[in-house]
Length: 159
Image (cartoon, rainbow, N blue to C red):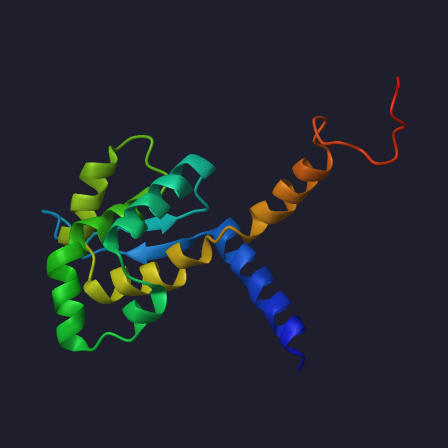
């Protein structure tokens, strides 16, 4: 297949994933007087632009590229967790609609009740899908419609 077509399919898949959301399981909770454990899930949704800015600011404070993160071995992952675990859980928490819960509390909940495999997968697959590509068309159209930009088609008035 052509590389352009593959990229388009991946972009459409990412858009669908961001619109529908990703449901992540938490650890099962034992509830008194109930046979089956309570299974809670948190759903990651497409964040707003303000939240995307917060996520980008947090990721840039880590000082690592995605390729470097994916190339980490087990010891490197553990070192990453020690140094940046709170930031990782904060970025995951920011992608969840949490009008009823502050981000700090939700990120604490993620750190304590979500398995590391799910946190790592959510970070790699979901948080990194939010690039700046959708904004390039907006910036391009704003640049074209800029009223302060000199137009060559207009005649110069006066002498």
